[in-house]
Structures are given as structure tokens and as C-alpha cells.
View 1 (cartoon, rainbow, N blue to C red):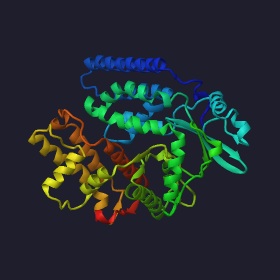
View 2 (spheres, helix red, strand yellow):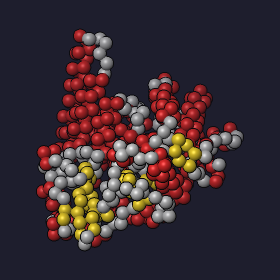
View 3 (tube, rainbow, N blue to C red):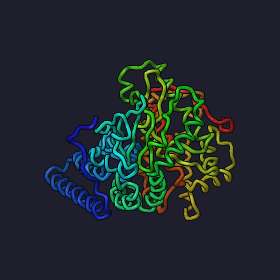
Length: 439
């Protein structure tokens, strides 16, 4: 439960207020660098660990007060273990569970605006404190007609500040991600599109129903029911799903069989969406999943869904095939289509980037190349981190003058690395089903 002490009484909503917060944070980060280099003059052997920790703390504290897109970007970056120094990963991971919640008067204000009533007038019981607070909204527990409910409330101002926030977060992202500006802008457009969708709660309920109905035949999955009469464009009311998040569940020492059951449900859930629906729950962080006592997996958040264009899907997954039995010119066409290479590349660059992306996709495709895959194999994840490290430090990659890879790949890669990461946390061995044409 959120403690009263850490509750937030207001959110900076206007562009000026939000920009001021970013500028103050930028000044703090600048100050941290000055302190670091002053100490380094005295002690040349000093590494950047303390600097990273101070920056991570200052940036996270600011973003968690602002809520919204900026905090969401931090959360996304923490999921990609290759991108950030550990201090940032550890701090930004908190965005998935524990941003400071809004105080109760602000919650009442939101209800009054959308329903003309307070939560007490609508529900038999309603928790005054949030039980979970993340980047876009917070969740309260309620009850009505004997049913236990989860009520998700979007933070004020989040929907209107997506575009301006992403512009403000740009300098931090450039510095932290070690990307060039063209590359960052290429992806920011995609991030903005997804985040705007994520603030549209009507769309979320519609997609939740569509995907959960389509996945209802998959064994060991549980989805909440959504209640239209208790929902609006900034409030969603759904069934409460009792259970534990993956980390808590693993602490109960489940058997290997139980871990495999949950892992299989997770794999099957993603397999069906990607290959049959061509749209996918693209936010596979641990906060979005609940494991029940009976070992069933509850899916509790459909805010971020990526629709996969068919030509991207075909090109991407044809590269994941174990034996790339296609001719070089066919392969070249796919690399062009997925924007890994372009006409602006020199022959040397083309050769280099084709090699790099082949290696990356073949590594990502490893679980697809076998009948079953043991995600407890930390060696596999070590290979992924080492490849990411090697590439990001490679001169050829650093001096590249253009963004690499279709923007559609941003959320698809993120979905698969996020899924693999969850399966690794579960230490699960799963049957890696794939469509017939991929075999």
C-alpha cells in the first residue's frame, strides 16, 4: 500500500511548469558532472559509478513527480538491459511499480470531472491510497455488488503533455542512450504514437476485450472483465485479479513444473497475438502480469498494443528462420525493406550492417530454432548483452549517419526481449511453438 507520506498533492500540468522541472533537473545533472570531474582531478582512478547513481536518482525523482511519457520512457529504457548503466536500470525499474501516488483529493477531482460523483458514491468501498502507482496512472481497489474491482485512474495532464514531454526528455535520452539524433528522432515518433494510444482508455478497453476474447482458448490464462458504466476516457474499472507478481511468486519456491506452466502460458499468449492477430501486447514488464494460486497467469494491462504491418511481419520473421535458404538478392530486399541498409550506404557499410543484423536476428531467433528452449540459461542472455555491448561500441555503428531498422521493429524487439526476460525470471523451459512457415 502507498504510504501517506509519499503521496503527491499536485502534478505540474502546464508546459511551462513541466519545462521548468526538466531545466532544474538538467542543472542538477550538470552539477553532478562538475562534482565528478572535480573529484577526478584529485583521484584520477575514480570511476563513474557515483556519478551514475546521483544522476539516476535526480532524473528518476523528477520524472516520477512529472509522471506520464517521460517516466514511461525511463521505464522502457530500464527493460532494455543493454542500454543503460546499472544505476539507471535499478532506479528506472521502479517506474514499473512505485512512482509516488497522487493524493486522494486529486483522485476525487478526477471522478467528479468524469462522473460528477465521488468514488464513495459509485462504489461500496474504495481504497483511499493507491495500491499501485506507475507512469501513466495508478490503481485503487474497490468493491461493488460483492465483486472486488481494480480502478485505474490516469494522472491529470498526462494525455496533453505527451508530445512536449518527449521533446523535453530528448537531451537526457541522447546522453543516456548514446544514440545519434537522427536515430533517436526516428524512434521517438513511434514512441509518441504508442504513448498517445496508451492515454486513450476507451481504446485500451476495446483492445483488451478483443485480445482477451481471441486468447480465451489458451490454457492457464486469466483476463479481467471490464465495466463500461464505471469507466471513462481517463478511468478504467475491471475485475481485481488476486495473486503475486513474478518476483514475489518466485520467492514462494514454485516447482519446475509450475514455472514451466506459467512460462508456457506466457509464450502461447504472445505466439497467438504476433502470428495470428498481427497485434501484440507490447509492454511485457513484470508489473503487467499476476500469477494466481492455481498457477494461472493473469494479464492486467493492455495499454500498449502494437499493430504489426504485414510486410514488416513477413520480412522480420523470414530472417528468424533457422536456415536462411534464400538467395542473396532476396535477402538484400528484406534488409532494405526493414531499413537495416539504404542507398546512402557505402558497399563497406552495407556489408557491415547486413552482418550485424543477421547476427542479432539469429541470436533473437535461437528459441525458435529448437522444439523447446530453457530460458533459465543465463549464458544465452550473456551472449545478447555482449553482442549489444560490442555493437554499440563499434566505430562503424557509432559513425553511422542514419537510423537503422524500421520503426516498427522498436516495439517488436522490445516485446521479444521483454518476453525472454520474463521467461528468464521464471527460469522456465517452454515448447517454443512457431507458425508452420517458420519451421
